[in-house]
Length: 424
Image 1 (cartoon, rainbow, N blue to C red):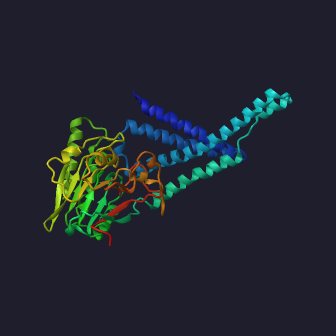
Image 2: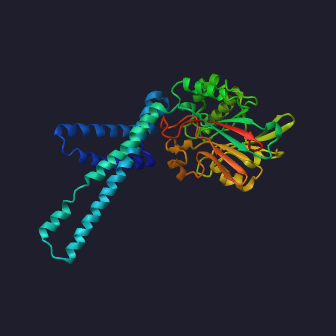
Image 3: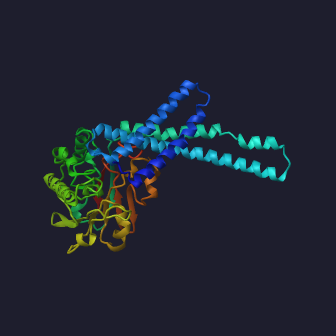
């Protein structure tokens, strides 16, 4: 017997309502078509919708992690693209319905204060038609995310962008003047369809000639096995002071159906071993000193800390226990909400925090002087550099992807930060 989870049922009902509402627009624009054409369009519409419903049900009652990776990736992508586009279309249908309701109300109210021809008033109130302009505009606007997300899926998932910036820190030790940091975040190895794109990313990282590479979490999506085939590739990352890493929210296996807690804990330990196999220095609520020419800077690494409902495993208090703060101190913390929650309030000695997590929602607009993504309504700091007094936060847009296998406007990122003691 199949038992339906209440959350699944609610989501399916919402999805059905979204479909029914969007279908009104398709019925309206195809009203002049032949019966055969209308039949084919309607059949195709509901066939795709039923496929999406079935997909959601199957994810709950089968081990969808074992599905063919191409089918899993692109079927979920279809679901995301269709839901996004239909919601946009539904907003226009809603506007049209509100306009029609307002016009109908005016007609009814006016009939109470004057003596119109009864039959004409009733007939007019009943036959208020949809606005051809609003519905067609809705279909046009709704097609923008549809086609842009298809484009982003075809051309942008591995279109890596190198973002270079210079950070002036007056207290920076002289031997670190010009120190080059490369930050990488959110690789999500479980989403890659082949090894070639990640190998190309590693080559780009090495071309930057970094002094140190910081990885700020989410090596996998669901479990450590996703990273196994990429070990030989990631081991090739080269930096003078190596790679220093932390865990992100996905690295704890919280989104995988484990047989028991012991299996989940074992997976965490296996992923920690992978960091070790890679030669990465995994900071587990601890700190590390980078030294050169008798001077040092401090790197602090915490497990996942969040103020947005994600898992909280880390302790900055533990990570800074018995610390000897350096002239410059850098924190690696996966979730950028940790910065405002704790760092800026209690830890003024932390000069720079490096985070990831948001991916910039993999969808948005970034042009000179303007930056927007829906994620900004959830995260105050979601991409790029932020400053509060003398403390800085940089949020990396992520190297990989999850869910939607593409990028629209927000490209995958490799960050290069050069530390300088003063302006050139």
